[in-house]
Length: 176
Image (cartoon, rainbow, N blue to C red):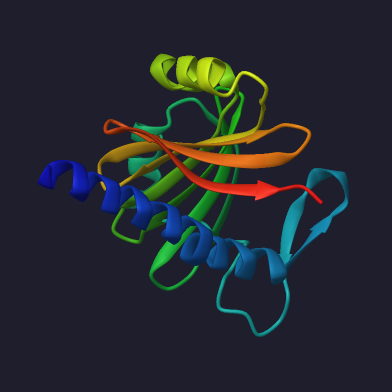
């Protein structure tokens, strides 16, 4: 029971972190950059501590290359303590955060139904047959992996989380 509680607490912490801290970091980075034309190179507005013309140090790039050997289209940003990278990994969009010492903070990968664990996919298809997958992500943080899926039907959205502890419905929002 204690293990299940710890796992649930960690998953909830990851979810909250993703939607607050990670989103805030991404929002800060997004709010302070402008895309330039079709090549999507980033330029930093003045007086900003996050640099998008950032070049990660060799420790970070070595760890990144080890974890994501198939990464393409890397776009790095960095600050004093962390650096962030958006990239494609085997055709899937990924956002990751590293410490300047090369430790992975988190990696968030976009998922389609075929990328979700088989058990999770089966539960979605059986229990939520009237819904379609709206959005899904894989969250790797603190040595654990969790999945979050948002399902949609004509009346509502349902957010599910999946960990080794099972599936939990964490939110339902009715459409107006």
